[in-house]
Image (tube, rainbow, N blue to C red; front, side, top):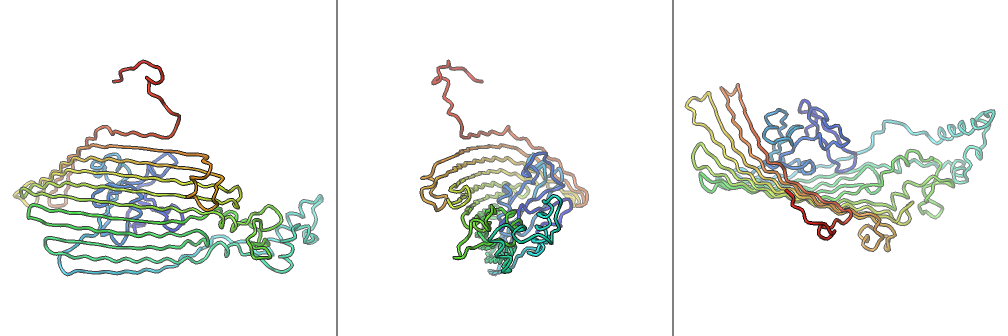
Amino acid sequence: MLRGRVSGMTVESSSGRPGSASKIFIRGKRSFGDSDTNSEPLYVIDGVPCESAEFNTINPSDVVSIDVFKDAASQAIYGTRAANGVVVVTTRQGHAGKTQVNFEAQFGMQMLRRNFDFYSPEEWYTLRAHAYANDYDPPKAWTEMTEDEVLNDPIMQKNWREGRFTDWEKEMFHTALSQKYDLSVSGGNEKFKIFASLGYLNQDGILRYNSGYQKGNLRVNTEYQAFKWLKLGFNTSYMKSKEQREDGNFNMFITRSPLGSIYDENGELREYINNGADRNPIYNLMHSKREILSDRMRLAAFIEIKPWRDLTYRFNASWGNYSSEDGTFKDSMYPSGGTGSIDNSKRQDYLLDNIFTYTAPLSKTNHKLSVNLIQSSEYKKRRGLNLDGSDFTVDRDWNMIGDAVVTDHARTNTKEVVFSFIGRVNYSFKEHYLFSASIRRTAPPSSASTTNGPLSLPPLLRGESPRRIS
């Protein structure tokens, strides 16, 4: 949606997998590190700062506007997090009047557009004959090479004589279908407004095996004008997704011989496509799987009080919860298989904002002056647990890792607290000349993290004398 619409901004796809996220860079990548995370902008959805993962899972049908800020004034409000710009998303709200119900359905197809050609079986045989003919000293003419000298494999020789060839591109890819449904309801009156939406996405991968993405979205935005001086609002959103990922060894497909056999005489998958050491990539795919389950919830509420005509106080509160489970398994039939892993992660964040806005009652309409004072508190907590195992007693999936031999493990626990004050003055003359001054003061962030490692005993248990630490 944003690609090509904002100058100085580039949008890149992280991969071609179904459901893969996009990465946004404003004025290029600014990090010298290997990760692109430090170069991404800050995302703000309905006034709540969030991570890029939450931005990428939002339902596009729920978005009413997206604003991209690149100037220093926006960075002053959000601090160092906005060093790479700010992307502000506003979702749809209810409106007074007749209730509106909208339903939208989309269907699509995706296919591979190849930018290179494979050898035909005849070209492949000729190239192989040239290669083996040059091994002789002196080199032989490739036309003098026999089938046994060129192929030296009973399976490939039989397929060559019978004209049975394998189109690996056809075996690997197919035309993938996608479907998307969105249902929304909007309505209300002068006091109460509501917007609710429900979305579903099902996208197949162009890879034939173990590739697909499903996602469901739910959003409810409400607003209640209790009195002229009091307004209340509550927004909630929920997302649940399931992603299936392939083994990922595409190099095996494009380098396999077109004379190899995927199946044996009984119709069973071969582990090797010939009598050599060329493994069957489809065999590997059928004996491995990976599944990623994700849940994301966001609850946000606000209270807006206007005690006087020129003064407004707004209190924002937000709670976000994200959890995911990434399971990988290769059964005992997979080359070097019988291994699996499971990675559980959970993130929570809290946000509290106190915002005072004062609009100066200037008599001349050519002048406008407003002052904002903001106090913000943020709390983030992350937990993760990873287990790798082998020698599974039940050769099924990663859920049996409790009965396997644990080969590696990791536990992470990270907390971060940010407390900040912001002041801002905006002045405009005839709405053509603008002046803005901002100041932000952030208390030193309090953070703590722990990871698995050797057990560290307190000084008293180690036999050391207690020391005072200041």
